[in-house]
Image (cartoon, rainbow, N blue to C red; front, side):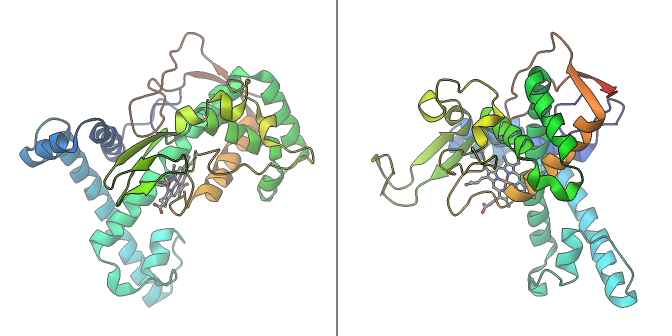
Length: 309
Ligand code: HEM
């Protein structure tokens, strides 16, 4: 069973308070998009309803991050003073000056916000995409067969770039089930959209990435098919797809900064899992997207896992 949140292959793993808090934060952010700002801001001011849950979850999650920052500060200091070898993770690199960021800026609050941002951006986006990927692959044995054939030909993790079909299958997953199903933008002054629509300043625009991935006029009559071939050119390389057409990572100056690392991680995990294990979806398990800012499966993905012969 791959649970709703996070990507774990065991139901025995305990639930973690900070992970639960993180899920609450993501759900309340969706709530904030659905009600007028005055409503949630009033709730936050009084400390009731969803905003009460948000405050509790934030306190829990901040405590978790503060502890990580404390440990990493100590490790970075040890590294400087005693030249000990420590993990070369992102936070340690920032704290030990290797990332070239002005040390005066590195207050606990700044670090907490940076780590929180990267966790929001990088943790559940990949987990959600992989859950849908394994479900789609299990439901499309012809795609699974082609991925396995490619994995047989391409060995080693340094070869991830050559996994063109797997790349196509990942893009196809994100087209049909984008980890971030919609985006919210706000104009700061009057403008004209590329479509020709004039908008006032301070206009909120909700963009459905989920719907754009399923529009016949964009993807053709077979838009509902899970078809990795869509992403592969005649020369058998990944086709160029304009970012304004495939919007899972959005486009423009604020496009996803982790796109490349996301593909590396997803392809590495998918190739390791599919090489060793056969994943079969348990019949009758309900597959419904959850109400969150991220495209989770509401009831997780229930599967039977067996070793490949
Ligand atoms: C399947 C995986 C992922 C998807 C679908 C995804 C999608 C997105 C989307 C839609 C945005 C919003 C862009 C906008 O508002 O215009 C975004 C922003 C961002 N993503 Fe990703 N992302 C993924 C993985 C990652 C990973 C692994 C990282 C880093 C470890 C990352 C880092 C970021 C950052 C830092 C931003 C903010 C960029 C900015 O505001 O300037 N993402 N991502």
